[in-house]
Amino acid sequence: MTNQNSQPNSSNYPYPQYNSNSNIAPTSKTTPYLTSTYPGQVGQIPQQPMPYAMGSSTINTGNQQVNNMNGPISNNNLLDLLKVKTIVSPFTEELPISPLLNEENQQMNCSPEVMRCSLNVFPQTKDLLNKCRLPLGVLIHPFKDLDSLSVIQGTKIVRCDTCKSYINPFVTIQDNTRWRCSICFRVNDLPQEFLFDPITKTYGDPSRRPEVRFGTVEYVASSDYMARPPQPAMYLFLLDVSHNAIQTGYLQSFCDILFENLNSLPGDARTQIGFITYDSRIHFYDLSDRQNGTFRIMVAPDIENIENKLDEFLPLPDGLMVTLCDCRTIIETFLNELPKVYQNNHETDSALGTALLIAEKLLHNTGGRITVIQTRIPNINPGGLNENIGKEPTSIGPTSDYYKKLSLDYASQQIACDLFLLNSHYIDLTTLSMLDLFF
Image 1 (cartoon, rainbow, N blue to C red):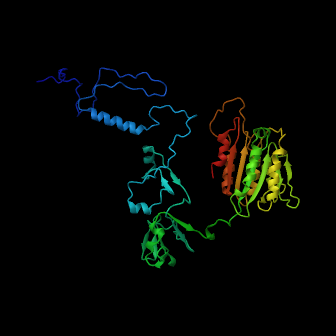
Image 2: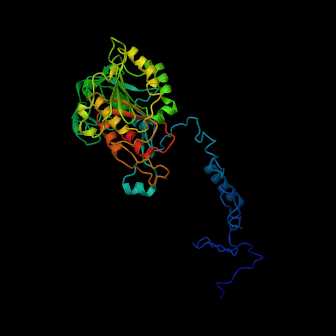
């Protein structure tokens, strides 16, 4: 009987004995250690003798695969983000095509240039998504210019009567007169005009319609699909004119640039524009006096408890937003004179929250776009924030929900807001950025 624990002769077996059927890895008498490294370099383990079953070609192949996965940036190279401005390749990469879709299915699904998911296969359960630890999101590009896009024009857009889903390549056509919804499985009637093929200009099989063949189509909708009649483009500018703002010199640059680009503002002949400036007070500008060609400045010094008297606060609601083409001369005069009005302003406070409330009141009937230029942390209620002078912020989250609530109110009234911060000191960006979060 042989001894089970006996070791083979070292001269015949230069490597530790390894049993391929065992789950126990071979032991080594040499303790691996990390070589000395410099900051940013990954430590390396000295190579140990490998079992005779693993050849050098296998090792070289594995090293090559690791190098290919690392790429040029992750090759243990330090990257100075202050000097290197381009980290991601500027060249356009081809959109990935799902290997699970054949050519016909790719045509039936939405074009990846318009909408695509971060995963080729959608997880069936939330637990599966949590286990795979892969990001799940959808990238949408509305009105993307495509090489080939079917434009549908008609008096009626075919949708399900129950769930309002649009007819699509995954529905079932029954007897050329009805169709079964692919979402709720309700059977709906097909309108008579759906039998007409706009491409071949013939009547016949409704399955030849672009809506049933392609996953990406564009509809020319009628006025029935509008929540309200088209409104004029409304541009309201909220400008910080506190002492800190004047010192930056931004106001002169802003007025010069806007003066040169008034014709570039999107919109038609009904486009309206208005301005509000603020420090510790709110300043309004009446630009409607076309007869004299001058503007008037109205100052509201008392802004305490403005939430309770907002309806009575606006001095001239009809003269604060004026039509651009009708009042062009007054607007140009205003832009030339505005920097001179506040060049010696010594007010240091900022009533941004109050100005935003007034802007909502001005645009709540039509919607529009608010452009805010702020240079310091707002410190007057409503919307006043803690300046934290000489202290490090104790929290990286929002310190107030005032701007979040205001953003939700803006969204419900079709008001967009652009926020430009030109600060040189702490401004609580986390809280102020909530203003642009819910559009």
